[in-house]
Image (cartoon, rainbow, N blue to C red; front, top):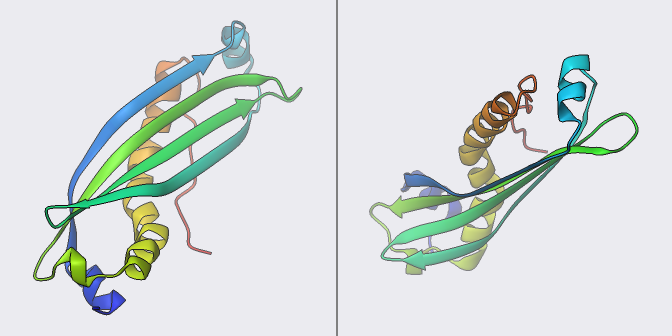
Length: 141
């Protein structure tokens, strides 16, 4: 089995695809956007579904965003799935090991996919008629 650092040095993003996008809004959302009501945001991120094929690591990354007004009423929800594909150079996936893959998914994948998630959340909320919902950059720890 190869060391984690060697694994990370030899893996590259090949493709990032938006696989699914669902948006739900409530009926009085126009009033909320006009009043500029502060919203609480719950963002859930999961990346626990992956497959290995043809020396590629393919990971489905799920995001769920739920916003509520000050009365805790749901204002809108955004759910989407990105598929991120990595390709290995100079090493074989069979030599990587399950622990290295799990560490990579927990450490590196969020760093790689987070800018895409931030952009789609901001863009979609704007297209829904709200001020752009700005998600903080991803930080480790």
